[in-house]
Image 1: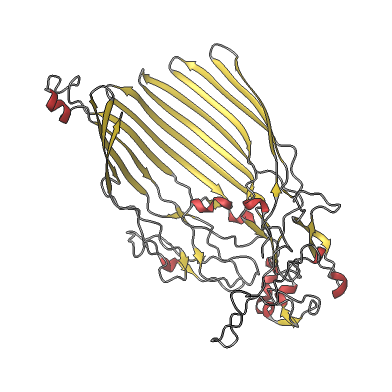
Image 2: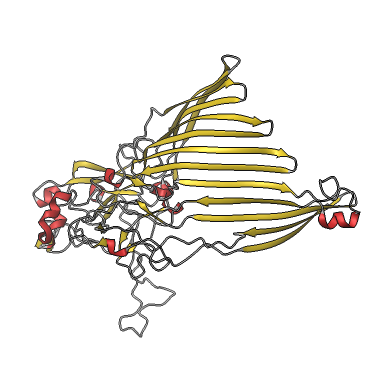
Length: 527
């Protein structure tokens, strides 16, 4: 039985912006924005946040103090699930300066606050106490039904406890633990570029673009991980010791309702909980730097052409909720040291070249060739147009993960150790990299492979998407278009990333590829 949140929140924004032509050559764009987002509230005050320092009420029962407990909204407490940040001022500056004839400089800086996505607006994440499972007994002997479909729960449904447990809610269980204060994520972005007009129809641009993300969202941070210095205890962490919570916690997902528990459980920051996860924690960062070259041939003489070449580097320490955009997802090794997760972003592409083009074939009436051809020949040979997009990109960095986790950290994750050169001279789909360069780390250690490796990448992209089309005018109102479109026109193999799970039988093997050449035809009639 799950409760549905009746939530609401507000987002407000004010801004001022003005363009100022300071001189004949200099134009400024000045602005400032203020953004404010209220914390989500629930109509019935069923949200809760986590007090990380206040002693849990169970402390008086066990004879020593353990910190941490949930706090419900309303009833004298604030109604919002967290305290929002109020100083979200975001300046904007842009300038355009004519250095000399045909040479233009552009520069800009902007600060952009990111509205909280709040997966489900914390709906379900923090409705602690308002979810309850009633076990269903289908049969006692594996043959005879115990109950009828007309009355599957003859004893009735177990109702959720709601707020009745108060600060003892979720003790002995997994709990989400929204922090009391939530800073607003933001991105600072800047650029400096030059544009030169080569001819009236041709220009060349070179631009530096950078940005810096601050207080970005982790998917979650495990706050109940065992402190790393205690991993030196090794197998002693697994020893069964008397459980001080026995008799006080009557239901638990990690054995806190049993007479004994592993020693490691009692050494956790919040030993009365199985797991304490801070969802959507705003504590991540990112850095992006690039130089972008662009050549633009505007439409003339039946042709348009655009070429963009980018050299870039993208670093961060978490994918957060954008992990779905990558083919792989890395897990945090040590939640006490998230700065050590800094690596390339899984979508980092060091070099990228993209070409787009439209070309009218020079055949037919009014063209260079066949200007005097008859109507029948012109209908067949004249008026054709070719267009396409070609992309050539480096591959994504690979993140090596482990199939097992023997850190004993009760929250952290493990990666292999890098003990050799992972490169092979001629990568194949059966051996994309040297799998022998990776070894299983010792128990109670995290491994040393970075989150994503800068020197080990998936296959790059070589893609040609082409189209050819022609329009025919029939009578006055009717137009007919024929199109032939070819995706991956030259059928170049573009492989998926290899298996990057250390310990998996397919480790280092490529098992898939993007679709082969695909050709489709279309006929469209306008009237």
